Length: 252
Image (tube, rainbow, N blue to C red; front, side, top):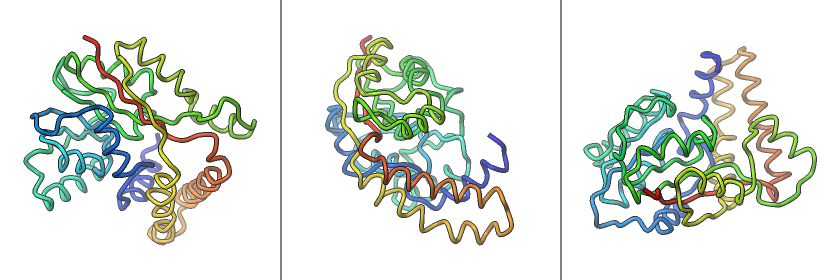
């Protein structure tokens, strides 16, 4: 990704509570589905943590040390500030790093968590690469863009296949997990409010300030227009795709 383009995307999203669809209730649902024990001391990696919405919730909900990984330093700085403000700084280790070049050792983590981020390296590549970092019996919790119907209009099919070729149905994603050393435990679909109330509506409110900060920058205008089109596209075709949350256990 072009550095100037990436810097603009970060500037747009860094003021957001979330950098993608999700919700506190859904994070809690995933914790329960994974049967993560709140009384046991755990080591968790939150990969692609953004500004830390899930990281902070995991730290508040569980007895855990959390390594929070993101590629963008500005996101990590927001997380560090918020963790200290909440008195969670000692239990969260922020790490600026690519999810494809993690400095972890084998069998280091009880849980690997990743909300709305694994697409950056691809679902199959991600679940296979991260499996080695889990202890035997450790839990993987990831959200991934997923078809939620068997058939769909050509326009939405072509849009997603041109933007993310790994989009697939839940059954296809679960098969990948099974083939990658995991036993699937559960799956659910993020509801509409996770996209609109928790992500798109706050993001839309950021656009005027973003454009004002970058007045005259054609790339910023293009980014804002792309975001608006993406929002409208979701509103039109939300019956056909969403993020699926996948919970799986490492076999050995």
